[in-house]
Amino acid sequence: MNFTERTVSSKEIFKGKIIEVKVDTVELPNGLGQQTRELVFHPGGISVLAITDEDKVILERQFRKPLEKMIYEVPAGKLEEGEYSNLENAVLRELEEETDYHASHLKKIHEFYVSPGISNEVNILFEARGLTKVQNAKPADIGELIEVIEMTFDEVQKLIAQGEIQDAKTLIALQYWELIRLRSK
Amino acid sequence: MNFTERTVSSKEIFKGKIIEVKVDTVELPNGLGQQTRELVFHPGGISVLAITDEDKVILERQFRKPLEKMIYEVPAGKLEEGEYSNLENAVLRELEEETDYHASHLKKIHEFYVSPGISNEVNILFEARGLTKVQNAKPADIGELIEVIEMTFDEVQKLIAQGEIQDAKTLIALQYWELIRLRSK
Image (cartoon, rainbow over all chains, first blue to last red):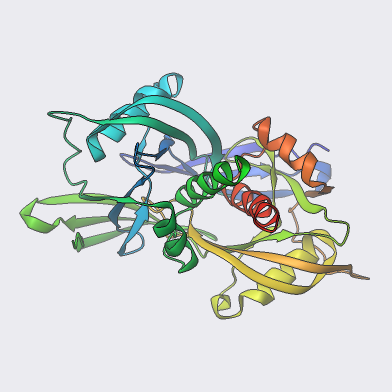
């Protein structure tokens, strides 16, 4: 089936530093008439399940203004202009800036839209291994205050059971970690 | 550590039918100065990993305007006003409207923010079992054109491996399905 919605008109609402908001009027297929679509455009980002040689995962705690609280997340960052063609570069940059680690091995795990009903925001999740601490690591962006925590598999499982892992990309990463452990048994 | 960002001022940019957009100026902790935050407010939603008595999962294909394409998703829907206190009701409504199924057993799996850097959108994922077809099921919303597909575990694993599951909540649901199968072995 093809349910393509043809754009009749598009109205620019907001163009910020990160997001752009438009309201489109669309023509539904099958003569069902017109509707409006509220659309958020976002540059997308990468995230990384980074596992140390001691089999610990690197998590962060960061204050998130939309939630007015701190939550646990895997290291992640927005893509810069044109960076979709060099994702590994973005992963290594964000990992170094936020955690001071370099990874010798990267592997793409999943690529997903976080809120496809309203946004084109995509996230590409990588697995990083072969971690070594970087001397004089690149500094994080100004205003990006991050607490870095290394956790064992059992500690993470407890946090998930307690409902303390509340971020979609982080749940995908940590469920993947459990899956590869279970599959290899 | 406490990295709370105090709101200095808040500017309403857009108030639509689904989302609201604001730009806040915040005071960073530790005297690091002020920054702006682009914020999208969303009513949140539920999603459901619905497994039939034949051990098939119910997926949908729907056109998503922000992506200009159709993608696979688990059944899902936005929360209505005040519905956060009765999530099971929302799950049963969306499942019936979109798939014509009623579920006798619901279990909450995870609750997660889909894009915590810019949005307060939350999704609460449920597992649904004991599915029976409803006679004269509630109709879907106008303009919500959905193709419903039932798939075996092996068919779903193939889609994931091919990168055809591109929605965060759906990945979380399908990873969970594999996890409960592996854990029970």
